[in-house]
Amino acid sequence: MENTFICVLVISIFFSCFVSQSHAGNKQIQALDNLYKTKRSADSTIDTSYIELPRNVTRDIVLLSQDGLKKKDKISNFPGQPFVKFDQYGGYVTVNESAGRAFYYYFVEAETSKQHLPLLLWLNGGPGCSSLAYGAMQELGPFRVNSDGKTLYRNKFSWNHAANVLFVESPAGVGFSYSNTSLDFNKCGDASTAADNYVFLLNWLERFPEYKDRDFYISGESYAGHYVPQLAQTILHYNKMANKTLINLKGILIGNAVINDETDNLGMYQYFGSHALISDETSAQIRKYCDFSQNATTRSAECNKATDDANRNLDNIDIYNIYAPICLNPNLTSSPKPTSHVVDPCSEYYTYAYMNRADVQEAIHANVTKLDHAWELCRSNG
Image (cartoon, rainbow, N blue to C red; front, side, top):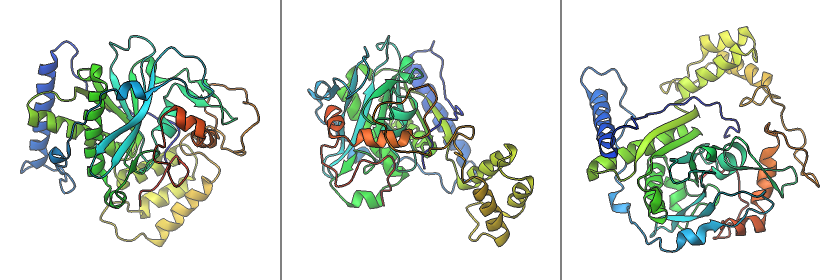
């Protein structure tokens, strides 16, 4: 399940703002080359068995006409939103015309100085979780949903104070994004997601050409620990292939990242132990008996007992926000509860109700395919 709190560990690749764009682009390409050489050198200790070059998307890249689509995508207002002065857009970008595959995006421009502030892409993970559901409506977007499921209130911590923020629901099958080719849902994986996100960006920049040369950052959380660096690698790879800056990538930011099962599981149980959520004895048993490495084919009885004990201790705790209450009453209220700037533990239920309203979907130009199921915060593509 996608976390609803951002415990941000920022991993960023920043380049000097005092060098020219072309020089910075050359430095990025050189850094990528050096990284590949280090990984593949004879004396390297890095496990390269899972490392692959970006998927060849050259034959799939089609820059479709975007004439008039930006104006069509402009959102006048979300139903029940407070007054704001910044512009918002929402709509679909086709990433594969022959397959009928298109991604839904929501874009919110910066409150001030939008012409000068960077463009930032936000990706939620899961995998299968919506960036509209979490990033936009519960974390860093400009609004949050009230307990009535009908109205919105301002998020004073919105990231569009510092950037022009783009949210995209990917891969196909997540949120309002769709494909008319059912096979897409079965063959979807990290490589195809990176390729589709890259094609999405190229076409989106054609629709919003004023952002083509803008400093660009990719950010995300959870399974975006895979999505973000793989998209960054794809961008740098094709900048090198084209011998020019197609997308002006400046850095990446990843919070609470899924990296691999071994380090993620070890880190999770160490966190529980260090915060006294599980006993010292349980923590020691997990360290002693559990092998979370990719080479482990079975798990010992002692490990199963220890992790079962840990999970029982965590039944009534939100592991993504251990100091917060859990949702005890998910029902909507007839009028909005008084809002604070602390996340309501039931906010997922309010967001689900709001985004499934027909007037909301119409206002934000979503669900044009009339999904045969309710819009969901997280969904498996299988």
